[in-house]
Image (cartoon, rainbow, N blue to C red; front, side, top):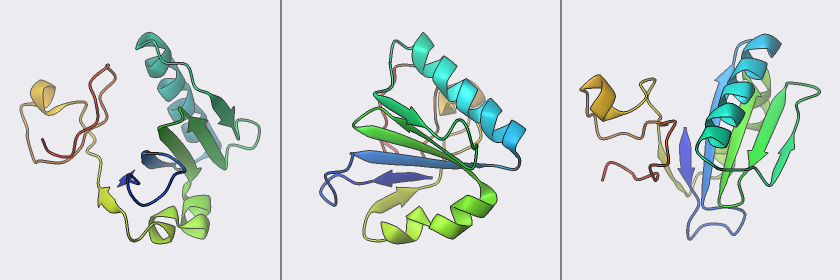
Length: 119
């Protein structure tokens, strides 16, 4: 899930929210995000939650990535807290160009491409 907070909050421009099904899954997602960001030349400003693996937060200042265990995501319900913001579901594919699909939705690409809503 991508939440566009521009004009709604000063907390960040975007929240990216995803879920893992277990602690190993959340760890794998967090490690993959960290490795992908590092490869793209981005260093997080702050990372927390690695110890508990219920909610890992990767803060890039303008973009904050939240990786939840499903139970924690259901409990905190960030999508409902930011209900007045524009939201887009992220696809499972890397990019529309690589998969040959273009459904107008965001996809998280492990590259330096900027996030744009179907543009």
